[in-house]
Length: 157
Image 1 (spheres, helix red, strand yellow):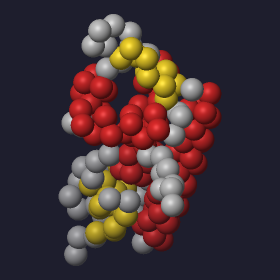
Image 2: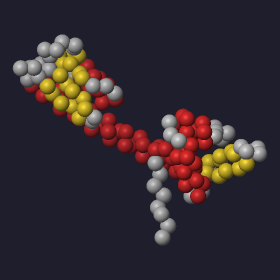
Image 3: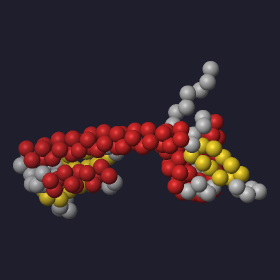
Image 4: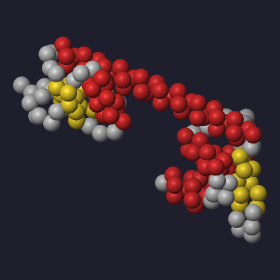
């Protein structure tokens, strides 16, 4: 029984790079993605076996990778899936931000500290500004603490 091909985010990155730069090498892909050359080799073999990428010898030791029409269709599907997943995560974080801010407002606060970094914290900051909640550095203000995709409210006693 044939194994089902499960495309990954790495496959999307590889397909996008091959499409934009056919002279790319496994070493340059590995460096750009921060993985071992063997990992790139494994992904490329899978993509070649499934007909998403063709390989041609360009020079004695140099290979040229070509994305096939099937590979372009796969790249498009993966990109759409990535965008949909990103939007779902954004909506989840935005809802959690709005819920936390609503709770802060119901407690009579107009300012908060935000503890955490990354995209979730940035979405939280933007939602605070949109909702009229000022962001402060005052340790006496309640804190919205970002841990992963979750937002916790901490108040000083």
